[in-house]
Length: 94
Image 1: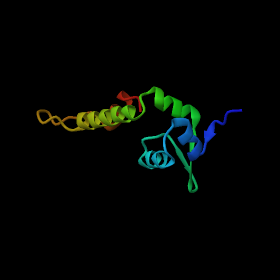
Image 2 (image 1 turned 90 degrees about the horizontal axis):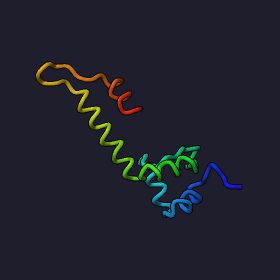
Image 3 (image 1 turned 90 degrees about the vertical axis):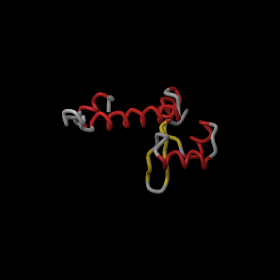
């Protein structure tokens, strides 16, 4: 039986990364994880989705999208209107 919820060590083995790297990425929010008490837990499905989305490149795209949304929400110097934050988030599918 394959576990759906992984410990940090299991996630590191699954991703073929060091335990330290997995913990650092979880703390930074660049790897999908949940903190339960003092321990991190990882969903095998979310890790596969993260890999299929391009891993770290996916996080870069999210950051670029958020930067664009924030930029779009800034008032236009000509007409002083911007895109409301909720509308920008919907445009990004958030």
